[in-house]
Length: 113
Image (cartoon, rainbow, N blue to C red; front, side, top):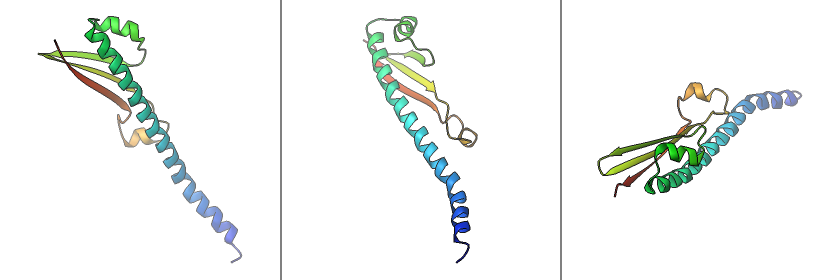
């Protein structure tokens, strides 16, 4: 009963790294979800520009995509528009455990008319 302060300190030191990892993972997951939402909006805008007759170079100039990669693939009567962006994780060591988990892609398929 006389060493309860030391026991609480040891329990705190054991639980702290796990708690911090969980907090960082939740923050990274939120960043990925937010980025996916932003990319879906950009994909919608790019689709509108593509359907109005703009080329990929004109779309990149209008959208001012610095670190967002846009790919337009025309195959037959369908066109696939893919927007992707890489995001760096803030969780320590997560990139060593899971590779390329933060390469967020959004695709939209439109019919050529």
